[in-house]
Length: 225
Image (cartoon, rainbow, N blue to C red):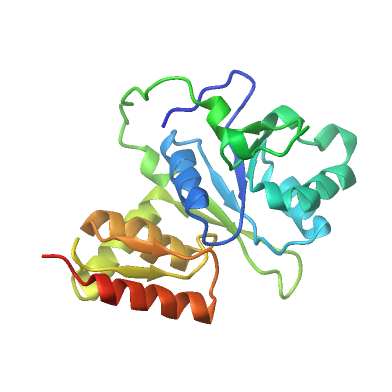
């Protein structure tokens, strides 16, 4: 996927959607892959407009990728922001198919930014220390704080997991119920499985019935050999 828009700067891109959505994962990986200055910031999907506004201003985000169902909270947060710090509509991108874009919305669906196939990018070898993710804490002792994670942090954690846990492969299955907005879910459900080719069954959130149904379905399919 290649996204190009002359009006869309992606130095710091906010990503806001329910914690375990596959499109959240795909967009997160794309933002990080666009370059050293592509920075994915994560919010909890249950944030209030005031909490959202704090993280929006604190992070200095210039673009937002959001699920349509979360727009009311986002729009309220932007309304509360100082006029000179409000993110304009052309930098708010909906994580949905064009056909499912809400009628009358001023925002683009992510498909409207696709133009052409990506061109391979040559890295210089110094980008590993750049910040890849800025995940916000729960804010239990005050306002939420952004926790920086570099590309090197991610690869180091993946290497640690690969040497510490039982080796998985393409014939195994991982049940993904942890949110992708925090480092544990990012490492174990997003990055590490890609190094072993292990499929991840992504659930939007933890739900007992959905979890047991997923386990039953996988057990019925079996592990192909």
